[in-house]
Image (tube, rainbow, N blue to C red; front, top):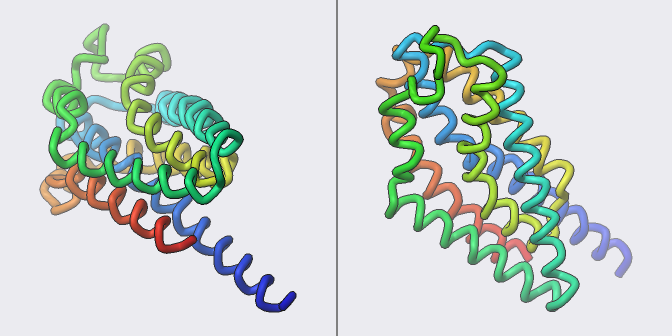
Amino acid sequence: MIGENGDEDSRRLSMHWITIILIGIAANLDNLGIGLAYGVKQVKIPILSNAVIAIMSMIVTYVAVTAGSTVVEYISPHTANLLGSLLLCVIGIWTLMSNNFSNQRIAGNPELFDEDKNLVISTREAMALGFVLSANCLAGGIAIGANGISALWTVISIGLFSFITVGVGSQCGSLLSKTFIGKHSTAISGWLLITIGIFEIFAK
């Protein structure tokens, strides 16, 4: 019995790690699209500014995951997990249907946040950009918190993939913008969120 419980706990832990990695990717695929747009327009995002964007995403995610975690205190863990998983699916469907118009606007006009028009995103400009991009993490963070998944590692995952996607996108904009991922980053993000939600439902 102890062995079986140990195997079950190990299986759940592994599935949580998969979810943590996937949510980090899904929440930041739009960031890849934004980075690509800046790269194509030759607007540079320095490492420090990219770090600021990632930190903004991490802060919003932490607040959201913490809020989601409080749900478990008022309803049963099973119900909380189910609601959190369904919420991820709903977010994915909404992403597909809305096509994430706000981020599409940024991608089409990357100079919006380059206030001084010097083709470089400063740390101050990065704070505004990071706040807008972190909206992707808000609802997803609440869903993850309701599922009882580690807030710390979710925050680290989202921050890490934010830094990677924005950095890679801005550095390789003209090349990656023509790839399948570059053209369909929002749709891929939506389907990935739906997949994570379904995965979490059956992982319990």
